[in-house]
Image (cartoon, rainbow, N blue to C red; front, side, top):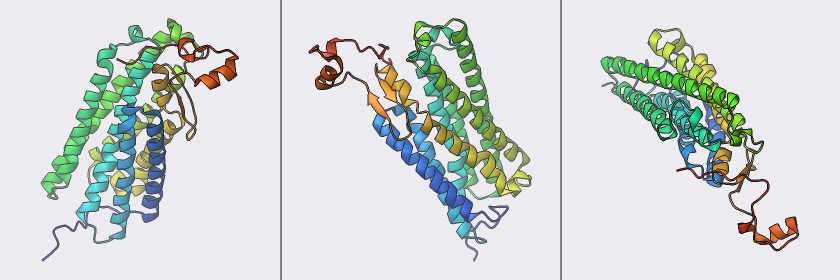
Length: 313
């Protein structure tokens, strides 16, 4: 009796073991850095970004295992990699949406935003959760193994991808409108040279554009279906998904949004992939005396290099 777990037609090619191992290592490495940065800065809204990185490297472990089974592939590793690699970008998106809300708060720019701060993060995260749940549901249907379930699962995944693209498109519109308004009528905080809001906004643009390209690629892939040209050639997965999602992870390693959170807390943060330093309070009294040559209480003296910013509600 044939093993029901075998899936000889799961892949339309022989998956590359070297490519799977390389991206497992790369995603693992950038995820470890994100764990370190998260622990140092306590920027908890970036947890989805970090978890997405974990999903990526576990997904590529699944591809590596699948490659080792050639030609007797099994459903387990196949479903693991297809689901985790598929839904990880939705987790990246959740952190991106929340980061924009923090930038708006940082420059006191709510009046320039199409959506009030009360709803800005909630609206986009709700849409992202819907996209995530839809794609995950589709992935679960694919795991049912029957031809009908795989087809319906693919259609559900396609719907989730359309939701994701719509949310990202609207998000970019909101971000651009906010940016242009801030340029025309900047707030006092935005005019301060101590607040690098433009840098973080451009970072969000870059990450959003990359995820948008990847999502459009996935839509085309699922529209073409199991007989499509994309699904028959593994190289497209690595060019338009693996490399792009790795780029998003690395971009946020280099320009870490934790700096915005530190500024919202009333401090500063020195940037650098492995040299983050939280400065959320005044320096110790001994350091203050050395720097200023007086015996004043650092807690009662305003630091010259720090602007007071409201705490996040």
